[in-house]
Image (cartoon, rainbow, N blue to C red; front, side, top):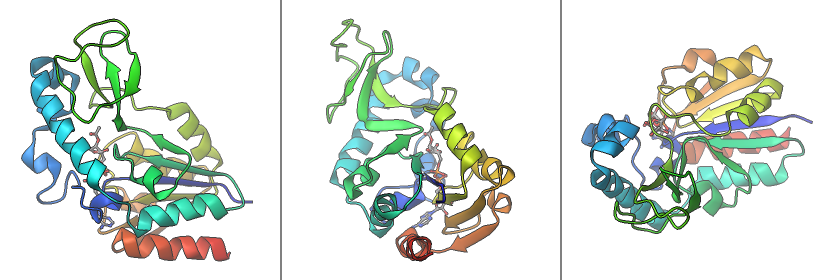
Length: 230
Ligand code: OAD
């Protein structure tokens, strides 16, 4: 029975109305990465960083999964072998679509943590620099998202899954941010069939044995159908 590992990026949530990062008009065209997505930016101006993530949390709370999220939940439910879904996305659209086990490599808007003691809890819709950590009392609460310069979550589990994968698919990601950008290369070197499903050519398309171009809501359900029919 085949082992499937999937990586998703902002492109899978684009048709649910959530902005990508690097497309024209994307989040990084409107906000400076060093201001809102680095530990140094948070130290300089926590209010600005909270404002950025509060807005994203509010927007994500309103969003609904699209056909691509739904297809991946169906793949998890119906595939007769191991299955791992890894997402770089901080939204909860995979969970809303019914995916049961999702690794959030870059954290989640739904999570909050204390920068002083590392305690974690479910994030309120609106966070502020004035909030106190319920455990240690420090006014150092932050979203439980991974910023540039920080270590992504669950890399041991992901590396183990990539080394054993029979099929690796990257969906809606530009291949600009490591370590995720390397997953196709690693999986292919370990013997997996690698496929990229994306609107356009990415920075790492050459690492994949197969590429399909189009909107995630169209090409992902079609691909899932093929996998389940095999
Ligand atoms: P990007 O914004 O870098 O890339 C999104 C990709 O999705 C692009 O290659 C688009 O062509 C593609 N795309 C857009 N709409 C699509 C659609 N409807 N169907 C299919 N593909 C579509 O987003 P990510 O690769 O996810 O990290 O970015 C990776 C990381 O960079 C993020 O997790 C975030 C960001 O900085 C941190 O904040 C740490």
